[in-house]
Image 1: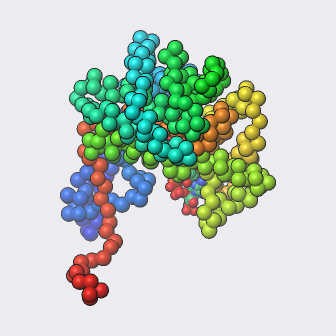
Image 2 (image 1 turned 45 degrees about the vertical axis):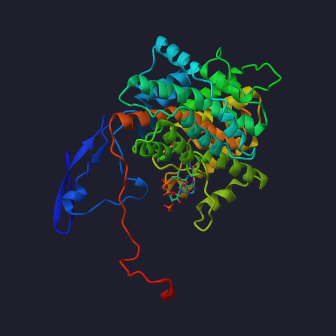
Length: 427
Ligand code: SDX
């Protein structure tokens, strides 16, 4: 089981097979091009290509398993706080009470953002998409924290991590408050981490903010469920940007931009827009399933399908259950929840979706909860980024500390062969 061979042009090349702690196997082709005099593999979208070894998150798409550092997502969503999961993902272990208290105290100490940053925020029109605002502000943090992380120093690494974990939620709440035309808020050190995020986002300037435990618990669960997902598009972006030794803040800013796309984290916004469209069109879910199956129709069933999950996304299961609970507890009736459930029920019986193993993913129901919590639809992907931050940081730290080489894939060139230059009069 520890060797694989590739034959080409009557020659056979042997390669070692690497394996992990969950019986996954990969052919290590690091010497392929050198041994064969130029042969490379070709794998559009890296669907069959492992980019790294990682000990952070394990994902089994066939059996709907997702674990952070060995703990199941169901257990963590049910029993942990988002701050505990942040610590677990980044440092590898669930924190003791003292470790968690110190982590939170250090975060509170760094939860201010330089006043000058407000000038950058002021430069955006209120209509700016919050993801663009958050990506820019995250990148701007570099200007106020110029020293790049010395990854040889645990203290330097810890301080950079605390700064980002502390300031990112402030920037996300500022993006929302800018949109709503509300004065910026710094939160309250007497609150727990997620309570503080909720207050920074929703507090009205003229009112005492009353923490609603239903909202806090729902957000705590959603942030945990989004916290990491191994080598997805935005995490791979964070790792490849960091592999050039660009700083942590710059790498995370790039990850925010990658997450924005509707095929990735932007899908939670696209799902609600799709469901609203179906509702406006009379709620005819069968018509939209047919559109999703029609190759000539660009319509896709947003929130459905996944590169890795060929079974139900375990996060979607937890979120769907939580959507029922939260809407019920808040006394919110949202017609699109019923439309979503109807779509799911019909799709899971439809050959097109069954054959392609297309199931609801993390984005299919999350927007329904965000909306019930009073979060505007174009802030949904910012909430995804807020959850994903610890995963991005953990993966960046692992990539730098394991001294990964700069990421630089090869290509198969399909352009013009050599041709002589022609002066402009002869073209
Ligand atoms: C996230 O990677 C991660 O881990 C991501 C994520 C994370 O936590 O980081 O889980 C978060 O991004 C979840 C996915 C959110 N995106 C969406 O919901 C957008 C809708 N889904 C699709 O666009 C699609 O399913 C992807 C992008 C998620 C996955 O695409 P793949 O793996 O490249 O699969 P594919 O596009 O090659 O599809 C395979 C087949 C195709 O049909 P055939 O050509 O074989 O006939 O399935 C079809 C596709 O047309 N298909 C869909 C579909 N998704 C796939 N058809 C209709 N509706 C869909 N949603």
